[in-house]
Image (tube, rainbow, N blue to C red; front, side, top):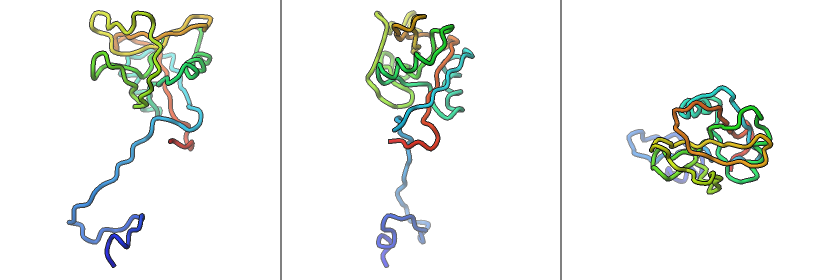
Length: 161
């Protein structure tokens, strides 16, 4: 029986180990079918350290892909601290801000005049809001600043699409 007939969509043991074969890559998608889990750290870290912490937690710095998601997130945050790292930066290509989770969402909520890359040294975004939580905005900051941060992940066992 021909090798392709034996497979029929199932894994098989390759008898000819020297034969070059294709490969399959699996990439985790950026969106959950169900609600996301968030982790809010009040311990200030640099942007890079916050990214690493979120990876350790099993997620990434949060993306915000709609005004509704932003408002839901703000409702859960502390009134004491009103500036958090989020997963948006332009480190790879100045002026082109992208989400580090690869979500590609187009929603943006920059404050007037932002991002401004002040002193040519601001590549990482923060979420900011007023004490009454009636409005919020984003700002680009120096990535070496220490800020609390927000991680986001798909709950274990929840399907991705």
